[in-house]
Amino acid sequence: DVKVTQSSRYLVKRTGEKVFLECVQDMDHENMFWYRQDPGLGLRLIYFSYDVKMKEKGDIPEGYSVSREKKERFSLILESASTNQTSMYLCASSPWAVTIEAFFGQGTRLTVV
Amino acid sequence: KNEVEQSPQNLTAQEGEFITINCSYSVGISALHWLQQHPGGGIVSLFMLSSGKKKHGRLIATINIQEKHSSLHITASHPRDSAVYICAVGDYNNDMRFGAGTRLTVKP
Figure 1 (cartoon, helix red, strand yellow):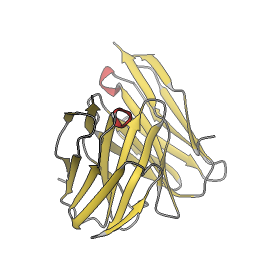
Figure 2 (cartoon, each protein chain N blue to C red):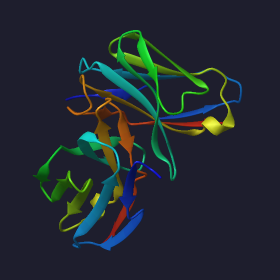
Figure 3 (cartoon, one colour):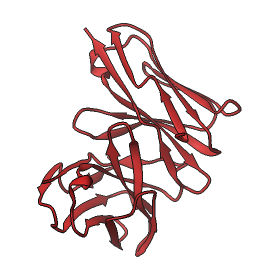
Figure 4 (cartoon, each protein chain N blue to C red):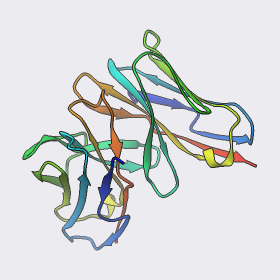
C-alpha cells in the first residue's frame, strides 16, 4: 500500500521557534512537494523537489526552507515561526511527472501562538 | 483570477441525490485530478484524467479539453460522501494548481 507519511498530525509552536515538518514516502518517487492549505485559498505550493538535494521555490516560499538529503524524505523548515504560518501543511509525492499520479500525506495542522 | 475555479463552493444534498461539482481551468494541462479531503485533512486521489470519462463505483469524472472543463458526479449520494472535493491540474511544467475546493455535506 503506497504511503506518504507526515511526522505529526497536530503541532503547536511559539512565535520565533524553528519548526521542522517531516515527510517520508515509500514509493521511490522522484518528486516531492510541500503545500499549505488555507480556507478560501486552496492548496498553494511552498517548495518542491525533483531529486535528492534539488529544490525549487513554489508560489509562497518566503519564511520557509526545505531539505532533501535522501530520496524518501522531504523536510519543510520554518526558520522563525510566525502566527501567519498557522495553517494546514500537506506533503505530496509523485513519480517523475504529476501527470502520472500524485499521493498526499495526511496533513499537519500547525498552530503558531 | 484563479487558474482553477470550482463551483459550487458549498453544496448540501439529501441522501440519494445526484451531485455535480464543476471545475474550469485556464492553463494548458497534461492531466486533471479530482481529490477528496475528509475532516482531519488527509487527501485521497479519486481520479486522474486527461480525456474522456472515468468511473469508479458511484463516482464519475469527465473532462472536456477543448472547453477546459471537468465535472465530478456522485450518484446515489450518501452521508459518508461528505468531504471537500478538490480539482487540481498538472501543467506542462510539472506543477499542480488547485481549486479552492467544494465542501459537500450529504444529509441522511
